[in-house]
Amino acid sequence: MNDYRNIVADGLWRNNVVFTQMLALCPLMAVTTTATNGLGMGLATTGVLVASNIVIASLRHWIVEEVRIPIYVLLIAALVSLADMAINAWLHELYKVLGLFIPLIVVNCCVLGRAEAFASRQPVLASAVDGLAMGLGYTLTLMLMGGCREMLGSATLFAQASLLLGQSFVFLETTLIRNYHGFLLMLLPPGGFLVLGFLLAGRRLLERRQS
Amino acid sequence: MNVNPLAGAPHAHDGDSVSRLMGAVLLALLPVTLYGIALFGWPALNLLMVTVLACLLGEAGCLWLAGRSMRLGLLDGSAVLTGVLLALSLPPWVPWWIGAIGGSFAIVVGKQVFGGTGQNIFNPAMLARVMLLVSFPVEMTTWLEPRPWLSGSAPSFLNGWLITFGHSALTDGVTGATILGHVRTELGMNHALSQILPGHYQPALAAVGWTGGSLGETAEILVLLGGLWLLWRRAITWLIPVAMLSTVLMLASGFHWMNPERFADPVLHLLSGSLMLGAFFIATDPVTSPIAPLGQVVFGIGCGALVYIIRTWGGYPEGVAFAVVLMNAATPLIDHYLRPRIYGRTWRGQPRPVRRKPHET
Image 1: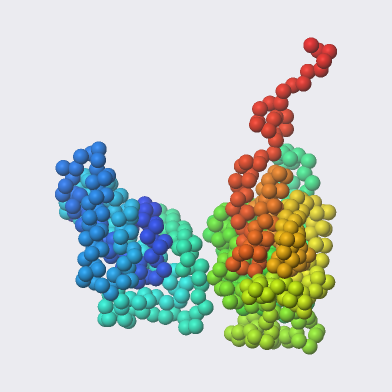
Image 2 (image 1 turned 90 degrees about the vertical axis):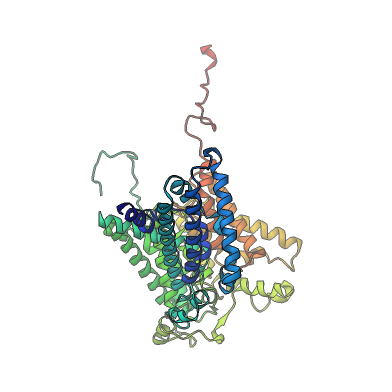
């Protein structure tokens, strides 16, 4: 039980994909112009991460060491294609918002990173928990980044959340300042790097205070 | 203040320090600053105070976070200079939050993130100006004609306060385009320069600053005087300004000679926009420009060429800030390849061959 608690704590905070491993920054910069986009991308990545960790952990005794990376890539690509088609078929509204970024999960290095670092040498259940924890940790950072950039850039929060989560979540959509001029830099990639840099500095400060 | 009389080299110290250099540059900027305030009234003074205050607050906050001496960092004048340079490069009647965001961005992101004074890669004031121009294009391109102090058109103290700190947007009646902006718009409509310029541009008025533009960039003569004084005081070297200005002059002359209806004449380029201010006060920043003389020449030529290219073919009418920031980014590379020759060694770093005197052999 203690092991699972460790895995969850690693995924959510201690070994967070973005804040500690500094992986998966490309989708992070591209998608996080709003908190809603971050949430959607994070959930899709989490789904793929859990599935790929389960598949790779269950096949780990048959995968030959020398060609393991091509096999991982093949498996992950197959899973992402499945997710892409499934979302297109059953969640078409969401696909219209996120469609462009879902195939990009293939090149998300945190999926391959967890396959190589965790799923290839751990049992199936632990790998599934690791995928879930890592994915949720990634989702949280995406939402944090998206929220910061959205608040600074357009003074809204969770804009268009109802498109992603359904009409019952309209209450999430808030406008902080009316007639906001817009802070374009924050919505452009340099703003993403700036916000990420300050969030990392904030995390360091927090850790220094704790220790 | 000499704490340790037997400290390391240089042993012959002429007493220069960061604060003395910053003081000299601030003094050289004083005439053009006062003139700009006189030309654009109370809002310009408000803006200057806002940017300087924002820079000082940003510096103090960062020094506090880093646990460094606040007195030393705040009193060396570098934050004040950044604030003044930023204010001089902004449209004089922008609302206060532009100055506040710009000033704190300049210090926090432009300087302290890299490690503080002397460690920054980009000129902080120009980085902030570029950021503001990209983020708030409407406010940053709202220019106005000069309305000097004590003339009927100048805003009163209260009105000036409202312009800077109030919510009222500037009415169209008081705004106008800069010369470069006007030329750019009209050229875009396929008008020839001989139709565009008369009535909008007089070289003598442009030289004394009687045109729309940023707070401190319009009075080229005062900028030139301040720059020459800095040269005389040896606070800056002549290589960067001369290389930058002559590159713009040569490019402008060449293209103007080929097609005078399409390309503005070199004097217009020299007397409009912030070219002069950039060449003497911004590109010469010792932290962000190359060290070796040859590198400084390359840096100046690069700045000048980029200014001309952006003004003539780019998306913005003026490009001094972009040019300087881009060349700042190239400075480490220039410093790497164009090192000065080490004394007593060849350019390749080998010891120089000893020249034997004939009678020894």
